[in-house]
Length: 398
Ligand code: AMP
Ligand code: MG
Image (cartoon, rainbow, N blue to C red; front, side, top):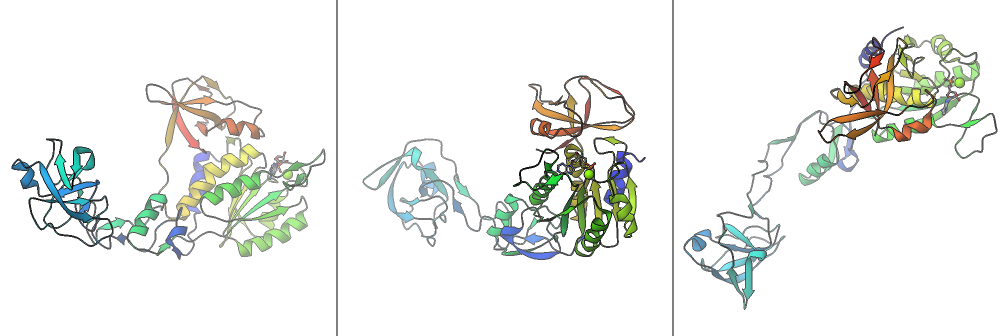
């Protein structure tokens, strides 16, 4: 049986690029910028920008002792630049406006008293060029503003909007299919008979894929090898990645491994020395990568986060996330010779450490426990005793 590290390496080596595509910038969240760096189309900000409502003056006047300024006119945001005609006067200015020609300093309303169109300055603390956001102080025209390979989040959408980038070339979307398996499963809207349960894994997977912008198709495999074979043959033609849950363990009706091999899928591994998720089966063809997770909801959930998401990152050209660590809050024992993925609740201690409190339940089927947990803590296979205060890697899912 292979280790978690070996399995991870094989999964990542099987990452698959799909062709880039152009998308409207509003749809680019979660995608990776491809093909080119994005440059600033003009200076940021594009003009000396007033950053407080108040008056604009020539600082020299204030420096020489002048405290009362007659208001010549008003410079609004969105209006072409005005000019101060008399240096002894001022122009009322609004946030976002161009700084009027002939002025260099803005004094905010809070430091003024205005009567009969005369602004009196009520503070001695005025500095040259204050409250002016200088043209080009953030970025210069043609500066690289987003680098190729950047993961686009809401912040990047704002940058794309600012520079007028209506369409952007990004990593393509994998065609994904999620398959449930097992004759005991019924749809969510159905009322299960005593021997049935509702499908949950496939919806958990669909929700996670949704956060990556992937709209997966959902299919079902009954516990019948012929039907499984027909559906899977079709899937291999139509999808870049298949995510399955159930049917890969030692049971009499766990047909997936034999059918997958029969239809020509190369098996990379079956079984990983881990709990939960030991029966994880992984394979590929030239065109499709197949993750077949065990059906226990916690097993498939853990494998999804520990193996599938890193694969998807790599397949989109992203660097792996650096390991995150937390400190175990209580002693924990785990005897079997397996890497244990302990469900933990994370809290911050007053000394700034991230603490992981074990959320112990009824083993790998205990779905309800997941709502009380924030992460899996990865406890190494070669040890059996884990002491409070020791740090181990965590895989957050919240
Ligand atoms: P299996 O891996 O097929 O032996 O299934 C292990 C356990 O997981 C069984 O109790 C199944 O009923 C359950 N299970 C399998 N698939 C799902 C699913 N999509 N949603 C919820 N539970 C499932
Ligand atoms: Mg089953």
